[in-house]
Image 1: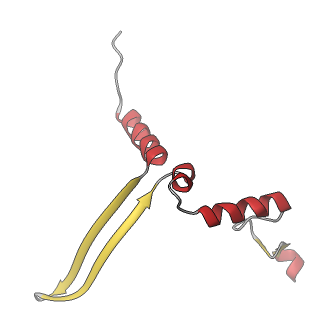
Image 2: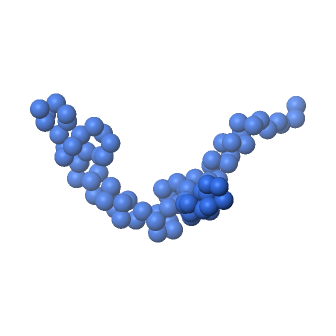
Image 3: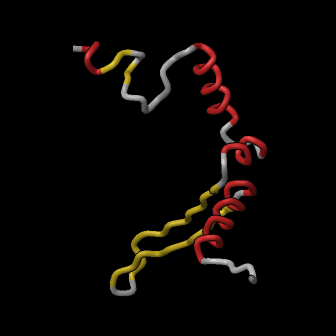
Length: 91
């Protein structure tokens, strides 16, 4: 039996490589109406896993703050609390 590679395998491999190594996407766009340029956009996005981002010096302050919060037992952002109080506690 010969090994076969499916399309799903290729997507998983691509995501794995991007998260492990990272990728930078750059794009320039000009929005114009009737040949008159109205808006110019210059976009640059870095996509990578947190391990790769912190390895290259990005998000170091954010990572350090998150670790301090976790060590202190503080609730994490996005867990439905504000200042450690749930919605029911604030009423």
